[in-house]
Length: 371
Image 1 (cartoon, rainbow, N blue to C red):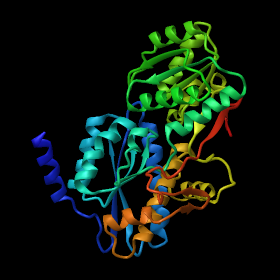
Image 2 (image 1 turned 45 degrees about the vertical axis):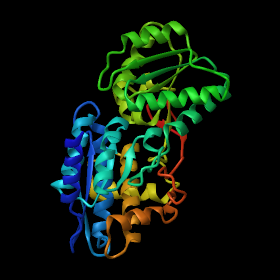
Image 3 (image 1 turned 180 degrees about the horizontal axis):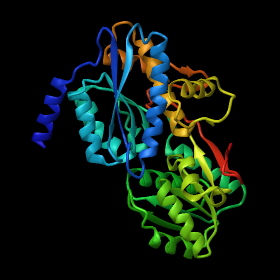
């Protein structure tokens, strides 16, 4: 324990501010390879498209934005190592775009020791929101918000026998808690619970447990590979309840993994606006920026989330002024609402959850995502 404290104290002393006369450096850690690599790559492409657009227009108060992105493979130890490297060696001004509940929770001591803010996390876990950490800012709604919307949707159409298939880590436990609380609000409880280890597709036992309970619906708090395997095996044993997943599943990746025909009718809660639509100015801007600055990148929910994350960083940096500091950046984020051309974020009330936006999407017959 003393060794950890000493290491963090040293890290704090060595932290550069990441700002020069010509640049501002930001750091990101997410899975960029392996089973979940598509999530991080799409998010990174969205961030880079936004930064390229801003840089082409002259940057922030004359400074160009730089992104240093490191691969953590959706594992906790590499995420912590990356956070320390980004602060200590890469001298970033702030962190952004961290992925996963457990990896992000493990990074909190680094934020507290160095005073470096983390803006935008791919996690809706309540443990990252309460108690409020002054260095962490969430762009997306919580898993509690998502699961409340899912259970409201299910009970409205008379589905009361609900099972939960969840990932056995911080993400899955947070989603499971949300489902239980949402069901309890309707005087219900899950008819079956079953889990899968993180980064695993060994779902046989989970299929046996949940199929035996004969649920009307299964809420899946898992990523796309175990989700796809679970659905395949459930159908193989003759069980076809209504399937609904939380946003981290990655709807487009799930469709690719299962195939358009097999994903028809599956619902997914989304915490980011529909990226194929044209109603919001920021969505139109995102798609134009992809074409201009990232020609090989597909439109996706994670890509738009990365773009929105970058737009929030840009807006906060502009408010922080010509001579930014980390404390000025944190104050800017707390200073009032941000309207990111249609997507609104607000940390002014002392919360570190900037949005509670949730909508439910469904996969159509041709594999298209409909909202």
